[in-house]
Image 1 (cartoon, one colour):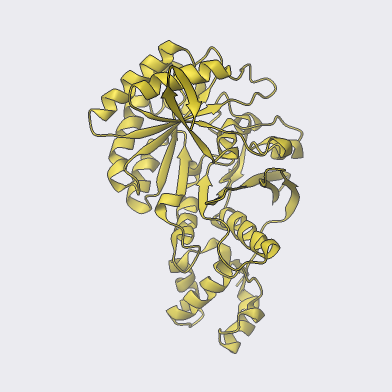
Image 2 (cartoon, rainbow, N blue to C red; image 1 turned 90 degrees about the vertical axis):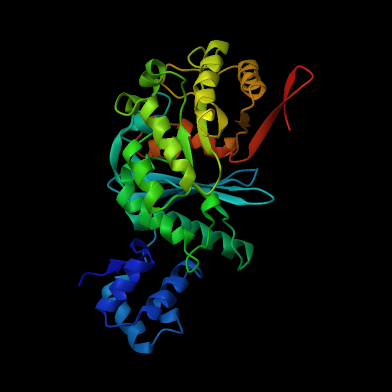
Length: 383
């Protein structure tokens, strides 16, 4: 038997693996806790396992993280790691600390096949899906490294967002077991409300996720009409807005919150005009009439070479937000984080192969701190 990476297994799979070794289910639970709760990778250190099992495990299994190519620390506390996933490919993981939470943004693919016009990762092209173990290795490494550096035993990472490189729902088979480990009380014990999957709109997988592992959902909308969204998010040609919004409505009863989040990258002269806001309001009011509630995150675009796009002016973002708020939609504008370490997804990984940099979807995560925008005395302001 070739050694298997135990990071690839959720608890049910690890239980099945232990059964093949003639071990009872409680041994799998013990092993699972050592790996994920305590961050131990050496079986000899797992002292409550039977000695015979500790001696056998190195022959058939390992706990293998990802090699770290680089680490960057921002003045604001943001940390970004670049992990080697082989064959010249790298993925990025970003930790964003706040006073009341610590959020980790995780990648699901090396590159991306969706090809959104404003996304540098898509411009770099698609290399491959990550395995469950490679997805979890980002959390495993970050959590236990930060604990060690801070000299604490309690959890550092309280929130996980699948908003890094790649389209998570196009790597569904690896994603769901990883989510289950994040949610397991024997693993990281995260609340479903604190684990978010961001998608460009893979409708069949949204429907499956609602049944298999419903967590918080963020949908990359970026346009109020099919014609415009077709030009920004090519996947819209396969799953147009009507199908996407139906899938979102159907997901909501299974979601851990009573709303879904729509992400909207603000592009100068492309989707940021008052007419676009009016069209978006009309689209969402139709959904609201059917009992579907949502929140909007407006994301300032971070330009990259050859995109042909520019970031909307702050005044345009404020005007756009004000229109939405006056219509009763909860609207936030992302505040950027980690500017001094290029914390937008794709910047470092692109450098590995000297490709383009900056991914707008990850830029949204640079700033997991949401700044609610309020309308007051004719002015838009962050609360």
